[in-house]
Image (cartoon, rainbow, N blue to C red; front, side, top):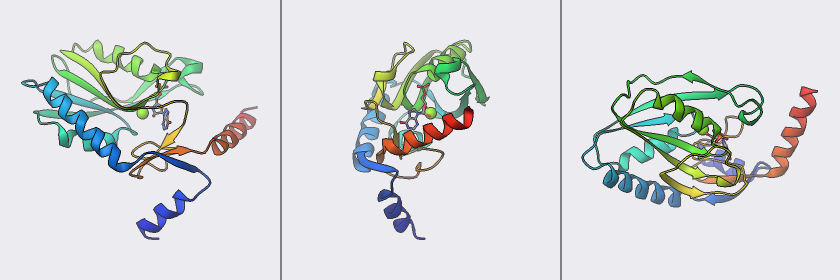
Length: 200
Ligand code: IMP
Ligand code: MG
C-alpha cells in the first residue's frame, strides 16, 4: 500500500473525526514559537527536553526554527496504575543522558492535560539545579488541569476532545499524520467499556 493510500484509508475510517489543526497551520505556529524562543533566550544556550514519545515530531520541527546554540535530550515517564489521576504516581522509565545543572531547560511536550505527569517531572528536574525551567507544549487542554503549572509557550488550546496525529497517538497509531484529528468519541467509549469489563 502506498503512503497516499494509507492516509486516504485511515482518514475515511471509523476512528478519525475532522481535522482540528491542519498541517500547514501547525507548521506556521511551530515557526512562530521557534522565533519567540530565539528572542527570549537571546545570548543563552538552552537544552530542550523532549518527553517521549508524543513530543518527538513537534521537537524535530521546533528546533529547526530556534536560532541559538542548543542541545536536545529525552525523557520517558509512565504512570503507575490505570491513570495518573487514580494513582498520583509516575516513574521515570528513561532518564536524561545530560547533566542539566546550571543550564536553561525547556521541556517540550505534545499535550498537557491534567498536568500531573509534568508537575512530577518539574519537581524531579528542579532537584538537579538547572538555571531555569520553562514549558513549551504543542497543545494546552486547560479544562482538565489538576496540577498548578505555568506554561510559557503553547501553540494551540483545546477543549475536551481526544486528538491524534503529528506525534499524538491512539494505541500507538496515527503519530505519522501531518495534521491533528479529533478521535471519534464512539470509538473511545467502546474501548473504555471493553477495558472496564476486562478489569472486572
Ligand atoms: P497529563 O497532563 O499528565 O494528564 O498527561 C498528558 C499526557 O497524556 C500527554 O503527554 C499525552 O501523552 C497523553 N494525552 C493526553 N491527551 C491526549 C490526546 O488527546 N491525544 C493523545 N495523547 C494524549
Ligand atoms: Mg506525552
